[in-house]
Amino acid sequence: MIPINLLPHRAQRRAAAKRQFFVLAAMVFGLGVAIVALVHTYFAGQIEYQAGRNQYLEGEIAVLDRQIDEIKKLKEQTQALLERKKVVESLQSNRSETVRLLDQLVRQLPDGVYLKTVKQIGPRVNVVGYATSNARVSTLMRNFEASPFLEAPGLVEIRAVQIDKQNLNEFNLNVSLTREKEGPAAAGKPAPKGPQG
Image (cartoon, rainbow, N blue to C red; front, side, top):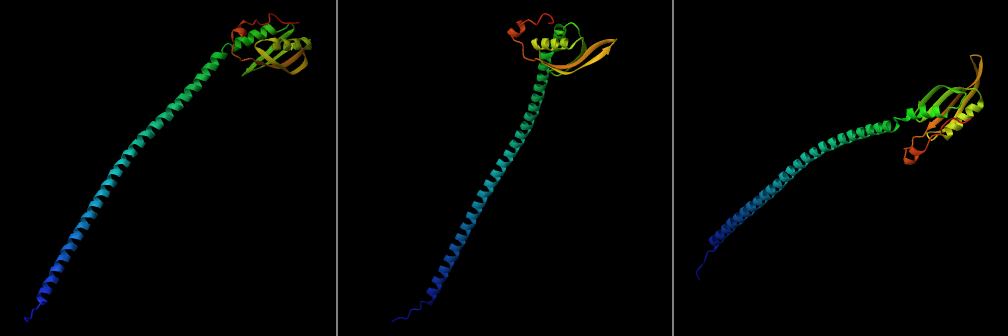
């Protein structure tokens, strides 16, 4: 038999397997690095894209905040205008009130009653005057009650006084103005023609 030495062949096979292992390891390492680089690039792109979207949203939010501020200012201006409108409407509806009050006072004043002061605060009117008797004050209050523009007369005080050597009764009473809107029926309703009693 011929002796065969397989030692060099085994060494060569080992060296080839080693080379093959290192090549495969290098390829796997390169593939891993490539995959990591691709994943990193993908996520960096996604982060950058999301950052751009966030920046866009922040810009739009700032625009909306400015618009909300403008809307608030417009609402405040609208509210102020509505309040002015209410004041103007109130003045418009009550502008003839003083004339009507004075007209009713003259119409409802019975003989023997003289007015000293008339003071209006809102719908309430305070009347101070002199009467020759208590019955005249009662007549005045009944006339106020019968008036379409006056209501709820209330006597505050009545006392005897002497003016120019004449005995009189000084009275103080309150009466309310009716502030209802006049319709055709109220406008056509005649006021009492003269004082009673």
